[in-house]
Amino acid sequence: MNRLLEGLPPSDQERAARLLAGSPAIEIDGGVPYFPRTFADAALLVVEDGFVVLRATFPPLARSVVTFDAGPGAIFLPPGSDEVLCGLGKSRATAISAAARDQLLAVPVVAQRIVEQLSLALGQRQESIANFAPPRHIERVRRKLLQLGRGYGRVVRDGIRIDFPISHALLAEMIGSSRETVTRALDELQRTGFVARVGSTYRLLVPPQAVLAAAQP
Image 1 (cartoon, helix red, strand yellow):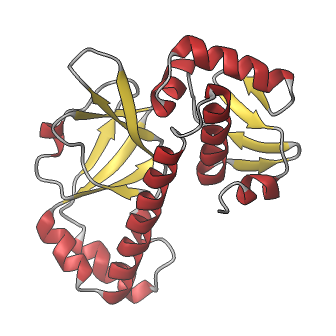
Image 2 (cartoon, rainbow, N blue to C red):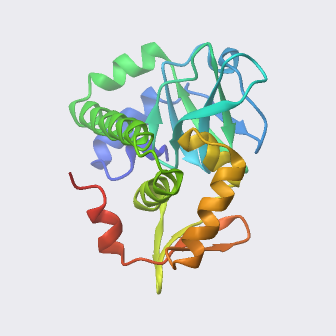
Image 3 (cartoon, helix red, strand yellow):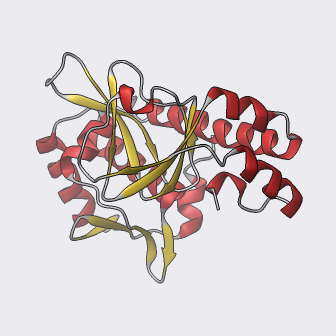
């Protein structure tokens, strides 16, 4: 079942599934850039499995910035002319055409779900932009890890585990910093007991309620 339809009443699920029957599922290989032409017929994308990011690079081959990150169930716009989509490991997304989107919006509960998911995506982008504000890079890293833990983390015995791989370079792209600066910040955050790294994944060593509280104004 398409992630967009999870939890909807069965009758609405069936109707929406028929409308989505012609929407292709795009398999995304980890680390491979997918350019806008791959999604030329898509008005919306829904992440079904895995984790993806949108990267903007100005000019081409220069240092890039992550403009959006999305896990299962997220709905977002396809990459723009200066963006590429990349998967962190094997991922899959459904491409919804403009015609299918308009038909889905005619189903009230589905329209509500789409608006809810787009609102979440907008809120995430606003928070990501706010993460650029602190002048100290260690605070940018801390805030971004809290955001990722809140959005995609899993509660474990001693904190919040972020299961998908996050390299120092990727985290640097997410906060507008250099890889070397991020490495130093992570070393300090590990020394102070905020985070532990296991391979390419992280565990936030804070109570789950503290992660949620970080989202409050």
